[in-house]
Amino acid sequence: MSELLALAEQVVARAQSGEQVEAYVSRGTETSVRVYEGAVEQFTSAQSEGIGVRVIRDGRTGFAYAGTLDARVIDEVLADARDNVQFGTPDEYAALASPDGVAKSPLVLWDERLASFGTDDKVRLAIDLDRMTRSGDSRIRVESADYSDGAGEAAVATSTGIRASGRENGCYVSVSTLADDNGETMTGFGFAVGRDPASLDLDRAAREAVERATRLLGAGKPTSRRTTVVLDPFVTAQFLGVISATVNGESVAKGRSLFRDRLGDTVASPLITLVDDPTDPRAYTATEVDGEGLAARRNLIVDNGVLNTFVHSSYSARRLGTTSTGNAVRGGFRGTPGCGCIAMQLVPGTRSAEEIIGDIDDGVLIQMVQGLHSGVNTVSGDFSTGASGLTIRNGSLAEPVREFTIASTLQRMLLDVAELGNDLEWLPMRATGLSMVIRDVTVSGS
Figure 1 (cartoon, helix red, strand yellow):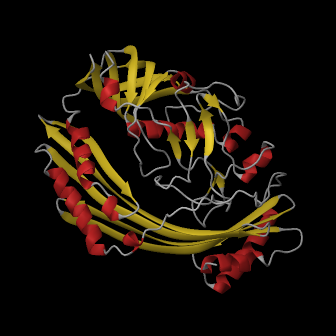
Figure 2 (cartoon, rainbow, N blue to C red):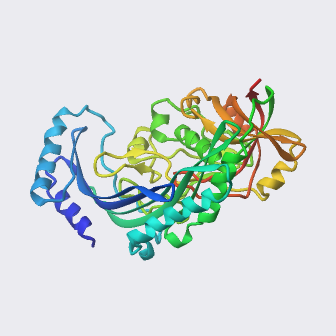
Figure 3 (cartoon, helix red, strand yellow):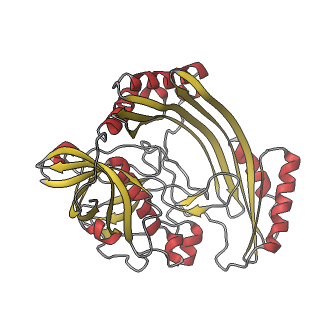
């Protein structure tokens, strides 16, 4: 038993008659290095630890936390949580999760090579990335080259019988670029993700950051029309982030999802099979347990275009009369669990992005979007966002374009997916990316 789990168990053992108690305990470290023009501009190394306690009595919830694991303070946190119950709004669905019999998938999420990786080596990675990027093209300036890593251990125990603990670490590098030519400046970025520093592909990150910026130089507005768009893998991951809000059980329970009454319906192209799979160790957000201590699991959300399930925490599941899908999420000991997708992934297609583009006579490759969340309504499905990218003409990438919008509805876009690429990319976010072809999208430019 881990030290943190033992501490959490000591707290919940003090549950009184008629109340439920949850203790979430964690500690972690984070390191970030930022390099500019070959020198370290910023270095941050931080440690944190703390406990959050939730008490539920008669449908009211009280919560308190502290950023220390001092025994005397923990006593105060439990007392404060109990006191805060009286201020909670009665909720007939308020309760802690209970064990559901789903076994944890054993994952290796801790890498000793990262744990023992020295500070000088972390700095060197960021400096190397900066140098490699700047040498990629004479028009390139590096705005920042960054190395980041994190390691954490957490445990959760409840008076309802949940006991869970684990630890994980991971790292990534990223670089932001500026390309200058004839008084014009365009931006780009690149990144690489891994469990250990040796797996970080700095060359690819640098190359992508250079290419993303330089290929947009000289961009103009495209001709307004309805056409085929190809979403870059990073844009597809952002798109999936929007879709995640529509399949969130809490949103569905509150009537804030365009799919709230669509279970069992065809909501997407038969090419779309969408899973949320935090048990895949390749995912940056992979985990063995969710934010309530239930086993994480692979959930099939859309099966060949058919909406199969929503994702649920125990709370949203109770509201909708179903069971948790192991999708409670929490930001740490300072907050209570919510509900959300953890590691979304589309089942990829069979062809590369180059092969896909080779079959498109007229279209636009969408390399970047702006204002995605503000331009999308997940209740009505309306979709409109600014974009930049490259024209596709007769099967080849042509002139760059920017300052245009792409518009449709989420419902229409999902149904109009014509192909998915085989270029699955693991990103430092809660969704993977791949190339996605969508027909009949409105492009508004000149």
